[in-house]
Each structure stands twice: as C-alpha cells, then as structure tokens.
Image (tube, rainbow, N blue to C red; front, side, top):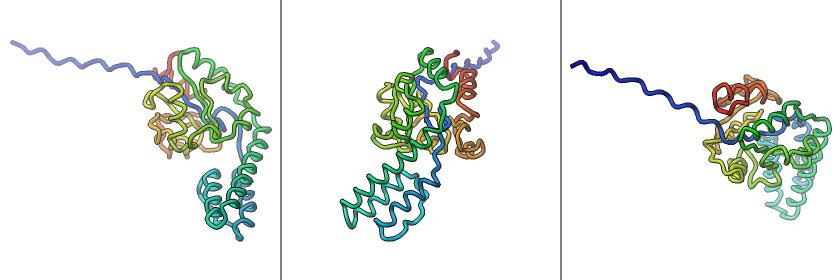
Length: 238
C-alpha cells in the first residue's frame, strides 16, 4: 500500500509582546546631554578632593561619580559623601539645562496611547532624573503604566535590576517584553534582563553603531519600529 507523505506542520503565529519599555533621552524626546562637558565639570570638582586631576574613565558618568566618591571615602568618608552629593547636583543641573532645550517627539504621546489601547503595557525607564524628564514630559506618569527614573530604580540600567523592577510592577515576564533605546547601553540592558532589544537611531548613536551592538530590531525611530513590529505580528494591529 502506498504510504502517506508527511505533511509540514503549520508554523505557530508569533506571540505579540505584552509590554514595551522605552528609554527616554533620544528615544521619546530630543534630549541630548553634553557628556563631554559634564565629564569636564566632574573632573574639576574631583581635583581638590583628590589632590590631583582624576584619570579619565570609560565608565558612564553615574558609575564614574560613584567610583570617584569611593576613592575619596577610602581616606576620608565624610569628604567622599560630600563629593558624591556635589557631583549629583552637577549632574542634575546639567540634565535640567539639557531638558529646557529638549522637545518630546511628536509621535510619543499618540504612540503610547495606541499601545495601551491595544492592551500592550508600557513603561519608561531612564538613567535621567525625574525632574529633568518632567520638564520635557510633565504628564509622563499619565501616559504610561510605569515610569522609573534613576531615583526609584534599585540600580540603573544597564544593570538588569532596572528593567526587571518595571516588569515586576507590570506583571510581565522578561521574555514577553521589549526594551527600546537609542544607545548600545540600552541593548546591553535588555540582554542582561532577558528582554528582546530594539534600537532606534533618533538619538546620538548612528544606525551603524547600533547595528554593531546586534539588537533584535533596528529602526530610524520608534514610529518606524512599531510599524515594522505590527507587520511582523509582534504587536497588535493599530
């Protein structure tokens, strides 16, 4: 008797993401901090505390500030605390100056509203301060399900604790979520926390630099990214 030929099993449709987390600076707003200027300011601040100019560092500024403060605490703990407080004030002042010149991207509010209307949970996750974000986006907490700036994070991204804290509040598992950002640091944060990673070139990083960090998705901006994700059935159709 002739044998029946095996039939190919139909592929399951991709499961849409249940949550999308967005970076803020360069992703949802045209907020660009002059980090070279900020490093010069922190260098000048640290020199009298250390007795010499600190060595340049490749660490992000928040982590570099922590490292310098720890070095000062080794020989004078109260002095290290004072330096750390002053350094935080310098950073926040720089952030606020940048925020006053920034604008929210026109698509940001409609995009967040559309995602929530389609049942996708949303979060905004940033290393920036709450005060700076609210200069640009005063209604941020009304436009997303969870907003977590650095003051409320257990540890800031790229440490996985930042994204995982937001997902815990949303009640979504990391493998069902996407993190969108404009910097390779955001891709590292997504990988560390077990989320899918999307990169957008609406900030200071080029498409080429972002592609080198190997995100799962790459687009010019969030609007283009979400249109592509809907086409791939990874988000509900608008």
